[in-house]
Image (cartoon, rainbow over the protein chains, first blue to last red):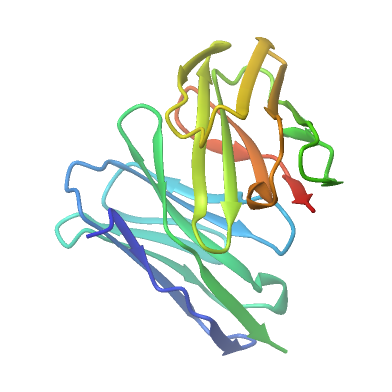
Length: 110
Length: 112
């Protein structure tokens, strides 16, 4: 079983839709969770990070962690064509080991 | 802050040539990482440094790969000799003491 599982997509939605991106993880000891956005031919950009269960909101983005289910989500409200990118979840295991999901490709159609 | 700066952005070389990739981390960050990204394997950790000291290089695929960090503001990843299977995007990332990891724009390497 992979430590982090992420649906690769692609996911296509109309502009204005609510997008839900998800990852599951295997180790209940994981404490630090991140979401990255990667545009084509660019580096991953840190979008959200959280230490705890529950929700964290930043503008149109909400990161949700459910430690009991070992499930993390990123919600994008009022999605825009500029949100079209690959989204990677990441988990910090220990001091330095960042475990990345394979990424979900999102396309928001105008 | 300018973020993590990598050079070159693109490199095309022939098999057997030496390749040197460069990275300037964000000032004040205590860890520096080198990753490789391919479609097949996603992001793979190659090596990381803490306060300029290499801590774990178990991800370096072969002895052809080496990395240095002579000071807090500069690191290199060298491949000698390069092979076509080394073609990938190589990312440098640096980390805040609180754990947030920031990536550069990457160096896209093509070995013919």
